[in-house]
Structure formats: C-alpha cells, structure tokens
Picture (cartoon, rainbow, N blue to C red):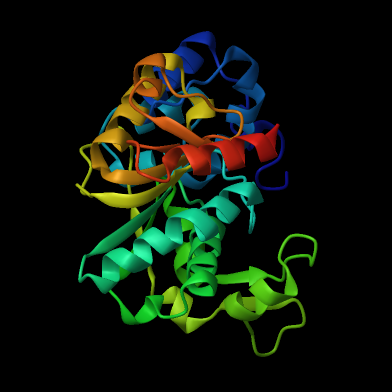
Length: 300
C-alpha cells in the first residue's frame, strides 16, 4: 500500500462536535465566524496538518489545537483558517483619497516635527502596506527622510513571512500603473516575472504579528488606518469590538479606511464623518465638508 493512501490515510471527515469546537475556538480567539457551510473548507485547509502532526483524524487534530498544549500548532491552524485575499492597489479609490487628501496633512505634521504612524491592519502578504508606501512617496517624495512609518500586521505568520520578504509576482499593468511600478519595484535577479519592493519603501514598513482579539501591542495614535475586508468574516459583536479598538488608536484627525462591503456600527457612525466611500475622518476639520462632498459624489 502506498503511504498516505487507503486505510493509513487519516479521516477527512469532521464531526458535528469537532466543527462546533473549532468554530467556538476561532470565534473566541480571532472573532472569525465559521459557518456550517464552511466545513468542507475547514477539512481542506486542516487536512495537511493532520497528516504532518500524525493525528489520527481531524477531530483529534482539533483537540490538539484547542487544548492549549501546542501553542505553535494553534497558530498554524489559525493561520490556515483565515482568508488572505489581497493584491496591489486593491480598492484604488481609497489610495486616491489617501494621496490627495491625507498625505498633505501628514507632510505638514512631520515638517512641524511630529511623529506620524500609519497602520495596514490585516495586511496579509503585504501588498496593501507597500501600495500605501508607494502612494505616500509619490505624493511626498521627502517622506523617507522624516519620522513616518507604516505598521503592517496580520494574524497569519505564513503570509507575514512573504510580506517581510517583499518579493512578488509582477502584477499586471491593469493593477499597477507604470508610474507607480517604477516607484515600487526593482527587478529580481534570475527571474522573468518576479519583482522586489524597492528599499526606500521597505524601510518605511515594519511587519509584525497581531491578533485583534489579543491585547494590542500598539497604542497609536495612527494618522491613517487601513483595515479592509477583515470584519466581513466576523459577526456583528466581534465587528463592534474591532471598530471600537481601531477608533481608540486613531489620531484625533486621523482617517480610517474599511472594505467596500463593510459597515461601521451605528454608534461609531455617530462619531465619524464620511469623506469618501468607506473612508472616515474621526472628527471634522476645516476642509472636512468639502472633502466629503467631493469624494462621496464621485462614488455615487
């Protein structure tokens, strides 16, 4: 019998009790809601770890992960059950608002000697953080000379390694313009379709692990926060916890960008003012109404 086939292969089925256990665990530890319809995905994503660890079946592996006895394996499982869909210049309207409306405010702040911090939360493999850095440098070429840094965080250690390496398949021209590509990429020697983020952008970005539902090792304030397409995997209670946490670390005049299919809770909507499609400033400024009307009208 070939190894891994037939009777020696661990069961790929997931019992009702096993599903309920991993669903409750993910909700508590990460805020992510696993629906019953996702059982096939759970099986597919965890099966290789069942084999790797020598667990007898999925239920046994889930017992290992949720027991607290194998911290490293728990992190591996959590990473496997998160979704990492990203690309350069995703939801480009947000980067347009950032470059034209936010960067001038940041430039004035650092020229006054202020410390400026930006946060790409749930950054996945880093494309969002480096896109943010490229738009920052295009609008404010002196940025690397000032105290401006971008924090890029995610819960999945595997994708964070890719973000740290900053090496990617060359994106299509339809995603990244030639002008922006020249700012972002350098050729990767020995490859035909791979590129590396340029050093001046890499130096702006710090990559770190962060779980929204553990104590945050950051306190801000952040002048800009991109947290897009993370809350869509959470129920309303978990979303409220996330949005409230981001609001606490946002600079008083900072801007929060969320995914186009996401919505703030009614309580936070009362404290934020919209300046574009799912782009929010934490309080009104002198130019606030003009910015809001311009970008909201463009998105209609």
